[in-house]
Image: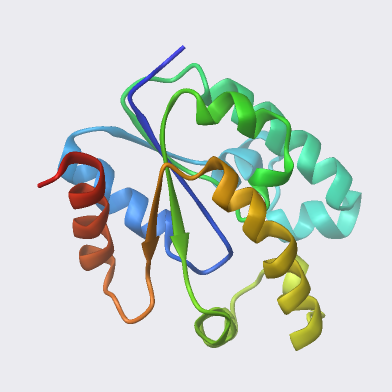
Length: 168
């Protein structure tokens, strides 16, 4: 099992993919995005998977990817917002340091804007609040480090992670 991965978790729009890419470049590490790997494996977008097969199928595919990535070393791993719901997250979390990227609910709503996010296509403010409320204890459980992303650039979030993990 790898032991030096950096695993990014957090709700949709907290910057896991963009920050992960920058972090991997700065540290000379590989980068893996769970949603991109699922899309590659299924040869369709996350939205298409949700519409055609449903959330349970997506979560099963996500679990396979999480388990596969748990064997990686020297990789920054950007997890989908709901990855903490998968059993494989427990194993992946042991392969490195897990960083929880947070954002205030208002920030998430603003950032969601016009993005294609299957779980949020029909999201009322109440549904969004409920999902954040349900997932927060799971994010907290896995997090070694927490970094708030509100009003920060991608570069600033990467800096904050480096400080938190390596005291630099």
